[in-house]
Image (cartoon, rainbow, N blue to C red; front, side):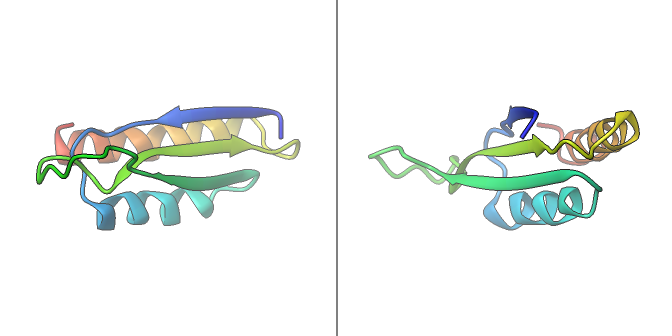
Length: 81
């Protein structure tokens, strides 16, 4: 992997995190993983996901990185996080 980026959307539901991950996995040269929430105390306002990791492989180019940013911007604007 060339570059790894941590993405957090505070309070975003698990289903939306999964939707974002699925959307990002369609971009060439990009791999995505979800990190579960590690908080010991339950909070309805907290997501079940702590963060999303986006990894760019050696075959990802500028277009792939730009597409990832477009996707993340879309979800950021849609969910006002």
